[in-house]
Amino acid sequence: MSGDLEQDHFCDGLVEDIITTLSKLAGLRVIARNSSFVYKGRSVDVREAAKQLGVRYILVGSVRKSGNRIRATVQLIDAKDGAHVWAERYDRSIEDIFAIQDEITLILATEMQVRLTEGEQARLRYTTTSNVEAWTYWVQGLSYHHQAIAKENQSSARFCWEKALALDPTSAALNAMLGFIHCLDARFGWWDDREAAIVKARSYADRALELDPNNADGHIAQGVLCLLKERYEEAVSHTRKAVQLAPGSADIANLAGFILALSGCPEEALALAQKSIALSPNHPTLYLGVLGNAYRLSGQIEEAIAAFEAYNARSPGFGLADLVIAYDENGQSEKSKDAARRLLSARRDFTIAAWLKTQVRRDKARLEADVAALRTAGLAMG
Image (cartoon, rainbow, N blue to C red):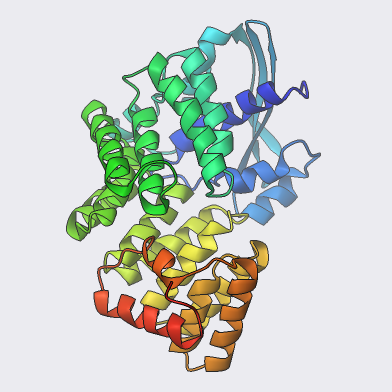
């Protein structure tokens, strides 16, 4: 409500934590942040929003931080008739932020009559960090992390999360996300050489699961790490565990689709990629790349082409290497060459050798065929 960017991050973090906690419950379908945040700061017709998102209930509210005080109003609305199911006003010390989140998530689950197992009740407890200053850095890092997968954004996220972890070294979530950040570094070569980045990623990911064996982000970080090390069975095992622990998380489902497709389980990957989009109708463009890859590796080439074209339309320059390969597989050599021209127009320094450094695939024969397709389309090996 204040218009202050710092408070904006604070509010976003509060909402994101509630979404993340509720997404751990098997009995709920919770719309992801990328879709729900579309309505932020707007006058919203609750029934129309519910229809667009395909949900029964809408949680609305406002937050103001003043000094050491938080003032928040929260309302749970049944979109069927617009009735207020539950409403509460909080005027608390900032130190109570985690208790407020716990209370909101528990009440929501109860009011929506979700039957909670004992394990699910335990998952409703807030667990990212109990240190307010660390939590503030955590949500600042999230604001960068949710932007495009680029060195500058992820570097800023890493900086914030390292400061948060210094304040709370026992946070499984912070260790897990730093592990994931270093997996990205290992794949794209942003800061360290590949092996150094993998060592850092493993250290953080191992620590996350040591602190909390049921941390979904810890398992997904381990899944990506095992994929990069070509330990495919372990990658699949960690990934399936993450999906089990956070069945309503769009980001977990999407990352699981990425890992499983490259680990030799394309049909399972496709189901999860589709689920991630269902959980986030206004999804990040990256989701289309994962969807397209799952389609292609499961043999649905026309659908893959449509997904990659949509990816490039929303994020120009992305998905074009995949389009070169997909059109080639579909026997459309001229369209494959056209996609190659578009790729070089967007990324003049593209080489197959540089692209190969970011690729990992259980099916080596398929990877060789992909390289051949790129060369046939006129792209340089480098």
